[in-house]
Image (cartoon, rainbow, N blue to C red; front, side):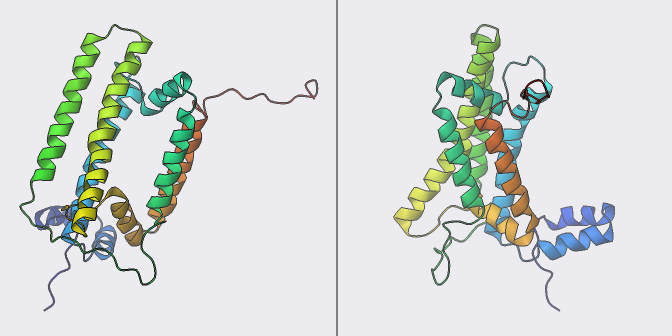
Length: 242
């Protein structure tokens, strides 16, 4: 008998899902995520955690009126007011992210992909790193919120600290660290793939994800480049104004 294909979630969790989800949805899940490798599973779990870390302060600021920190878009808009070229940098980063998420620049044709280090079940250090980064970011944000005076400008100071640390520890360091190690060793050595590799893996299994990612990034680009779009006033032409 052929062994059951390896899927995204552990066996004990799959048993619980089978008992609460409709058969059609359960079968789709098993069929879609059949054959997930340990490294691919690492990517789904780890980058989902990073997405949650980013979403918590963002949603907290969005639903907490006059909270101690602003949203990411509000912080970006404030920075664009202080320094206009920020908008150009934001647009360039989003376009780069969209291109990489859709696979532009990945090896094509006969190009060989770099070898991947074998993933072990006892690779615990990434969880320690990201756990320490979560605690450090939260503590730094709390300290700054207590130190600065109240008011709108103080909110943006807290926002710069929180979102700056999130971008540094959760995005920049893993990307640079993985790239430097891969260049020096000639192969991928981290137990988890880069975020763009994980997005590409997910798009192969669920092609609709590519459309969702592209749509979201285009909306984000317009929102940040023309902040606070769509909450802006429009002049509606009338017969008298023509």
